[in-house]
Image: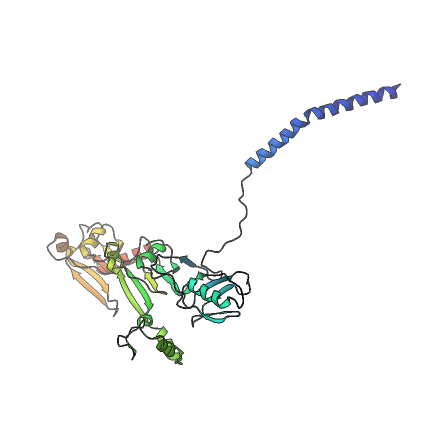
Length: 383
């Protein structure tokens, strides 16, 4: 009797459990979907992984070179050292990256050595297509692009926000290169030093067939004969070591004196040093180092130091100066009191001058000099 009563009870419990599962199944599914959506919403979104890309015009083996195209009035002409990308449809064996040699040529299968110097990318593509037409390919399609303009690299360093090497098409101006380098820093000096290869501009030996001596007007045969002659290695080394230094006043340039905004030659080096300083010490209210600007005077230096103290011997001001060429020390004694009162003509201050205002009670000038030097060495590491 107990066995017969056990099975119906167990069957009834199983039916109840099955009914509950069937009734709550959709609700449980919706609950799981909601939990999944909530988890996806809370999880941080991750963008799909992108393959690393190489900046245009910058090969993998030249780090630190920035490509920038400047506005020019004519198409770019290929030069020795440039890297070009040649793509020939239906002929991958002819496509690829090639560097223009020092002689201005490139080598291609089937065509051999090709002159690339002095032509545009479209002209070079047309020449290659004509050479392949009806002999290697029928109606070939060729495209030529500049991968890197090594012959048009410009260098800028010093007091700019992004110093480095820049590849620029054409001949940019000094202002353009400064702008590409992120502009000047706050402590820029007043003079920009431009170093360029002087032998590029050498035109002082006129050719016999050209009384004007212009390289552009020389016959092609004369230029070819001169380049094919064997040259002495010492002569080549001496020619490559000839450089020209040009100084440009940046302050005048930014004041609107645009005749100083010269155009740069390829491979020019522009150096903009940090601003120079001068020192004021002794019996002044705020001794220290101050940024030197062109045209600075003793009256301005004392004013920057918040004036002289009541204990200052204003009539015995000494300016310590070092000659930049001979390195000789100079001591210039002036009457600072009369200069500040306008009774005597002001005195010009040069870079790295040390202005000492001694004490009227007879303290030595050397003590004041040592104090200003130790003070500024703590403020300016490395100077």
